[in-house]
Amino acid sequence: METKLTPKTGLDVNDGTNSSIGTLLVELGKISATDVERVIKIQQEKNMRFGDAAISLGLITESDINQVLSMQFNYPYLQAKGKYSEELVACYAPFTPQVEALRTLRSQLIKLWFSEGNKALAVISVNAGEGASNLIANLAILCSQLGKRTLLVDANLREPIQHVIFKLKEKHGLSDILAGRNGIDLISNIEAFPNLSILGAGTLPPNPQELLNRATFVDLMNQAMGKFDIILLDTAPASNSADSQAIAAVCGGALVVSRLNHTRLSDLDDVKSQISVTGARIVGAVINEF
Image (cartoon, rainbow, N blue to C red; front, side):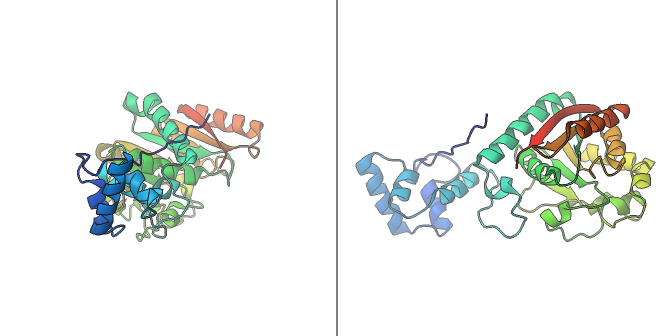
């Protein structure tokens, strides 16, 4: 069952948080000082909260309230689309049932895996087109919103996508580090999310499986685990190569992603068997409906 997160729209103008909702709305250019007086009058006459009163006057929208709430509670939330892919619903639509379902997944992973001292998790789709890359991108954002130092690694060295989703300027990445041409300083910080960093796939190599089986991959992961609390690795689909097995073996755990009415049960069973052979633990399985 999905639970919709309904944000409060009624914080009082003098609610005691970092800055009042009215002040923030003025600073954002959503309303004027004169509008604030109108809102307060309606607020007092009808015993309403400031946000609800402002909405009733047609001065702002619920989206405006969400933006201000994110500022008050230090919760990164982007209102204007364009800088990043629209697939990042955790950025642009954080109060939807879809994102609330991802929050539930985040909570379960923290309880079942990360709270046990583990830091890295491979996210593996059975086949291409099952939504694993979008899921892991949004999951990384949600983990960073907890204040966890989060690293998303695009370890799909065949058809990477995270550099497109986050519009990374850095062209080099994981493959270049594994080939010994660059170091961990290639990791990019995401300005909008202070606790989120991305390592793109980098130059497409002719030998991805060999690179991922090198000791340099283990060394890189050990370095990363010294710097980050949560490391999520996007992988090539398991049905296309054995890359994901090598990654799962280093991480020690894997989250398997399938798609409703798309993934065959026999293929899902095969992937689970492949991961189990590596000694990695299957932390969970997600049936993606989106």
